[in-house]
Each structure stands twice: as structure tokens, then as C-alpha cells.
Length: 143
Image 1: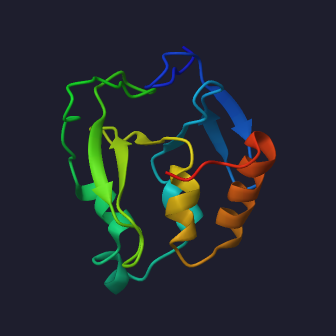
Image 2 (image 1 turned 120 degrees about the vertical axis):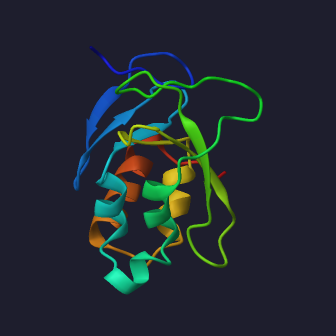
């Protein structure tokens, strides 16, 4: 089964980036990260820092249904995605991500992943992915 974009309902393309493989929508330029891939990009955190880390909170936060009643479905299990608001760093603006309630992964609208990664301490993997996304799509719009 080909996974489909939760927003556009078109088949996602598998894109091989330097640090990992992601599913990208050719229409809206959103992308899907499977469980654990965001942590792989954002870099390791110490056990003490993990309790405070807003990205680690994504694993524990069940999220909420979208306020407008739209039902975006997980590309892996077709369950309705839940919205989770995260502030990737203290001075960064809040970003609303779409989270699979079964823990399969996260959906990033165009520009959200670079915004999340830009607010984090730089890692080699994160920089490679952001550069590859810019090469693939041109300038990635910021939310």
C-alpha cells in the first residue's frame, strides 16, 4: 500500500536524504517522519534534559482533534491524526504538528520541519536534511 498525504490525499514519494528516508507530498510539500526519525535528526538529549525537552514531550502527548473537525489520516494506519502544539525552543514560536495516536510518526506541513530543527542545537544530520529539502524544493517556506 502506498502511503498517502494526510492533507492532499495523493501518494507520498519516498525521498532518500543523506541522514534518512522520508515520505514527501509532491503537492503540498509536507513530509512524514516515522517514529524515532525526529529524534535522530534533532540529536541526543541527556536523561535529565529529556524531561524538559519539548520534542520528547511529543511521545507522551496524546494530542487533540483538529478544532475545525477535519480528519487527516495517518499514512501508516489510517487513524485520524491528533494535533500537538510544540515550542521547539524557549524563544521560538509554537508550531502545531500532526501526531499519529498509535505512535507511528509525525506529519510536518511545508516549512515546519526546518523551523523545528532551526530552533535546536545544530546536528550534522539535521543540517544535511534541511539542505537536501531546500535542494529538492527550493526555498522551503517558513510557517
